Amino acid sequence: MKIKFLIFISFFYLGCSKVQPRRPINPIPSSTTLKETIKKSIRLNALDDEKILAVIQQDSTKTYQVSPNGFWYTYLHKNEAATATPKTGDVVSFKYNITDLQGGMIYSEDQIGIKTYQVDKEDFIAALQVGIKLMKTGETITFVIPSYNAFGILGDGKKIGIHQSIKSTVTLININNKK
Picture 1 (cartoon, rainbow, N blue to C red):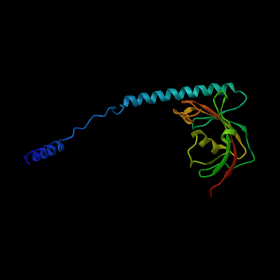
Picture 2: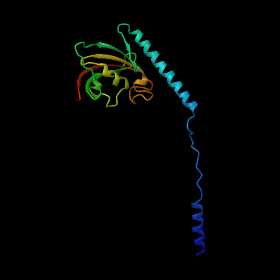
Picture 3: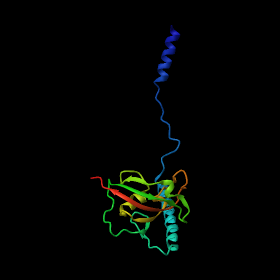
Picture 4: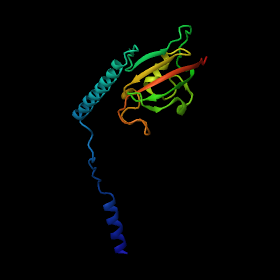
């Protein structure tokens, strides 16, 4: 009986000892590391922009406009008769392709098919989310999109690589106002 009591007391004593917290294996990044990451991202974004500007300069037949949202675009077909542009909540139908900056096909219109998209309510390529709101029914625009406005540091996991800038030609087929 004494042995059982001693075993019970020893388990009780050991079980109630104060637990010492452990230090994390990977410490929280310092502000220096964060600043270095920001500087590296700025450099990568500047390189993306330089590549895109070189492509645009080579394409002297078109006039490109720069968006305040960080992409470039040019009209291939402009519809002067139409006045309505998509607004938040509208459902639009469009077809588009994705190429690399040199024009090599990544995803064709046939592979993608007609896309139906609710403006600003669905996740989509960041630059095209903004670019579609510039368009009128029947218009075709080519967007030149830096990686940070396309698929970013991960790519799409299939054909679009990490930090890959892209071009996309979009034709807006229809706008359905959701009112």
